[in-house]
Image (cartoon, rainbow, N blue to C red; front, top):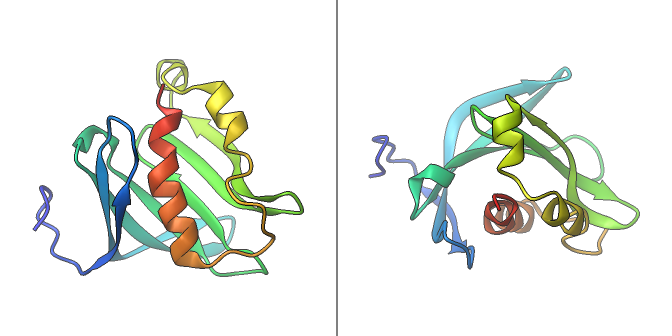
Length: 135
């Protein structure tokens, strides 16, 4: 059982090699709606709960779209001809935006050089690398 009382089955686990620590990804029954699409939602829990987030997954198209989000930020990940990585971001305030590293954002524009990626690999990459964006 996690701090928020969730007891869903574990989907993935891994390490971030950051202050966020290790992570556990669990499934949810939640649905995230974005631009007319429905996304399946996963919870991501870190050793440091201040990094906890959700990852929404859309299975439409050749390469799934993924949105990592909290109440303060939103990052979209998907594939291009260069590979899989972060593509867009939005922040609720300048203060939250300033807590993220723009150079790290640029370096994460290609996490793997593939035009197609398996969902579990993509969710694991996002869970492992997104905390590095937080300066």
